[in-house]
Image 1 (cartoon, rainbow, N blue to C red):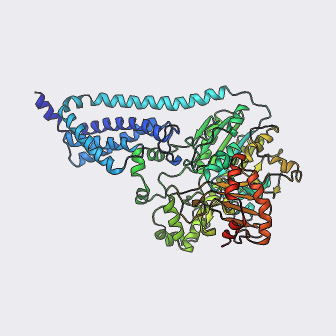
Image 2: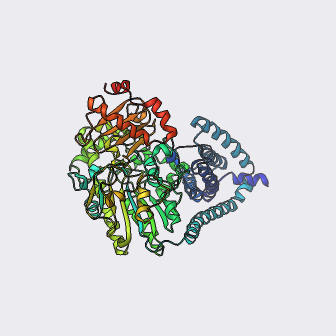
Image 3: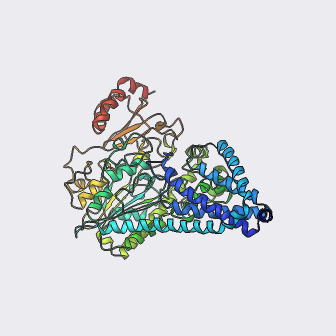
Length: 639
């Protein structure tokens, strides 16, 4: 009788196949969720140090659901192929499960995974086949237990996050009655000279221009770096990259307090809303001090993409096959606004500090219509689509650089046109956000800062994208402070300043905390309150660690870079012993390197001294001993 039952169990009905696939899907997903969180979500246990590969605690319930759907699809395919025998089905499902689990760390090669998967599936399917009737009899209970575990994970994670935020909010100290709201709007990858307010010929930014006329605009705001991670670290800590740490990718340095922590201590609700989930995220430590942080899992596509099978299957070629510019689609500025306003509306009793990151103009340059063609030639899209090939993926940087550099001039111009169209879209969304603030009566007492983390190269100096060098097109960013009745209207400040490192001190100064010691870079408010009184104001630094993910001919591939900007000169020094000096007011494209000229040599001594004097003493001695700009290095850089 047992033999007869086992023979009967060896053949699966369509319902039995789906039940079996659901069992394996839930079990695989529950294990995967824990593994992904351990290896890609917790910095202290992460084997994969690359920040863009991150997840957060929500993966514990997302992975089971995604795997459930994935395995059910596999079960449907097996049924359609008329594979109804138990052992082949068990082999397929157990093979997929072990491939999933061994692939979580990213340290097992594909051949080893394949061998291990076949061996594991052969053993498991054979043993389960021998007792198939009993196993199938318990399948329903396994599915129910798996669904219950997924539900518990969902309630624990989502409820826990909401409870943690609400509890922390309830225990905030009382804020001063005069405390305004604070909103920092960061447009990722926005170079200053593509805004109308900075003299650009195209009307890309009418809303930002109007806001700037009601506040203070800085004509020479310089970022601390030319890419996202170190620039955001400076924005929140008020520190330069040499203080954060020497590596290209590393989480926020816990040594230094953040602006969010400082405002949390002053009774503010704090929230961050990031569309750049690659680097401005919780995994990189940016949630420190924020009671609320939105980054990953902003859509069903993003949730699926962050699971193991999502990363493996939904890649560039799949996006191209199904006609998408990006997979998953990036979080749009309109979605960021919606999330921000929903969070603001939840509690109007306390002042808020919100930091938002718009990602719409970052490569690939694919704003939605009508913005995509707003500044482009009418026939540009059709003519250049074959040349573009598959989509430009900023996470696969070698491919991105190669694709952009091989485009014809006309097709490359289309990329810049789309970039400008993206700016127009973000500008409209900033206008929409200000309208919503006005509708809520929040415009009367909200301090707003509009800035960027870095610029973008469009073949200047033979470079594309960003994070490759420290030329002005990458470090010159917009900066506007707006708070009607508290900040002068229509003032322009020409003095070079650090847009990023100065942010925390400036905000605290405007809130009335002029004696704070947490953030050392001086407050910019002094420049409009007491113009001309600060002749010893530090000139802004820009820095970048070595980056081996870019082409070898690019400056940052060869070693670290540092630069300093004064009202007349821009000096760049490099680990590879080359140096560059530009008189940028007369040479905006920085085409004439004057480092070897008689005037340049006279300038360098003072500029180099100021640069190294701003580097922390423990690094300065070593840097000066090996990188001082002596005559040999000056001569070498002039070749």
